[in-house]
Length: 138
Image 1: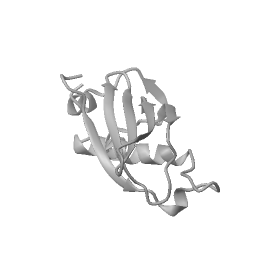
Image 2: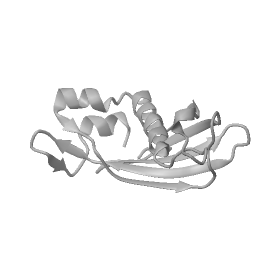
Image 3: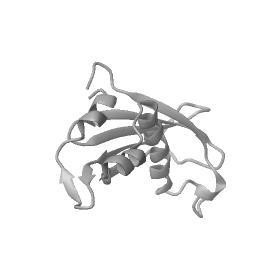
């Protein structure tokens, strides 16, 4: 990576339909928040993985996720989801942090890992394409 890690933040208001019967955000929805921030991070740096697939026939499936739930989110909580690129050489590794806007408390942390896969062969590539690495300055 270059000297500083690339980060991007998005602001989200927790919608009612993300709640579970206990009236807190269902654990699986944290991955949706991560996805919104990750897509914004990549877009900010000129990387559109869907367009890349259409052009190059390479997909970038998520192979690993991790989430640490620290403080529950509730309906209408205003949150900041920060995505930070950790690595973009062999695979895309992104760390996440979710904070509530009103008190800046950290509610969750997470990580995703993605690899490049050539289709239709479904052949895993053991490094990211050079143009993706260059756009992400890795």
